[in-house]
Amino acid sequence: MAYLSAFAVQSRLLDISHEFGSAKFSILGEGNTSGRLDEETFVVKASGSNLESLTKLELVTCRFDKLLPSLDQEEVSEEAIEDVLLQSRVLKNSLKPSVETFFHAHLLTIPGVKFVGHTHPIPVNQILCSGFGKAFGEERRFPDEVVCCGPKSLLIPYEDPGLALAKRIRADVCTFQETNRTYPKVILLENHGLITVGDSAEAVRVAMLMTVKAAEIFAGAQALGSIIAMSPTEVSRIESRLDEEYRRRILHGQSSG
Image 1 (cartoon, rainbow, N blue to C red):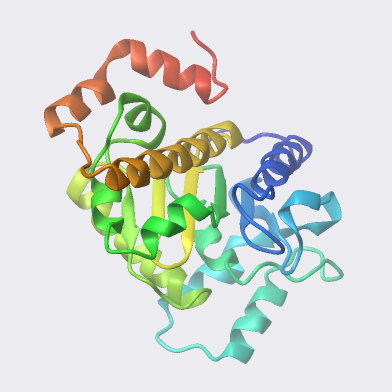
Image 2: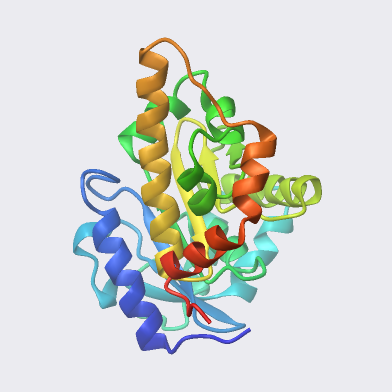
């Protein structure tokens, strides 16, 4: 897998972080972002920092091999988790990484995933705090939702943020891949928020923006009395169309060649 330079990863990560820090997606210290640097390291938002005003100094470089083993341990104390987060830092004088660094570490090991975004958009959380999360994730309402978010999203039942959530995400992503023969682009966290992943920062941004739009349409259609979902055949057709694949590459900032 080819990787961008550290400067390019940090620059792209700051761009989407600042956008994701707007009130449309997150407030205060909510949400986090990450980007893979190479086979051994990645950068992630520091704990307590604000996405909207995030700086390069608030991006912490971490090692995969210090974090991923914790996902295989049955019980890890809060003190041990704190220690693992601190020990994962490449530079020991850098800030402490977000408690959600564990799920970022796992998701960045998925083939093709180089960037991860996590936010708490009000339109999405209105659905994820209701009984409609399953329908919202498993169905698609319009073609651009398929193009930008994939044919189906993964819904994760509520889990304690941090290591417990990372373990659940790893298990459910594996099941999703085995069932659908593809990885999810969008992960919905019940009573929590939204994660999008991609091979570029722009892919993460596109999936995030479209999921928020889809949530607004879903809620509006529900308020009007009914939601008309696309059929599986219609979803499959959009997902496999050559013109839509071309447009997807353009949206993700990739070459049209």
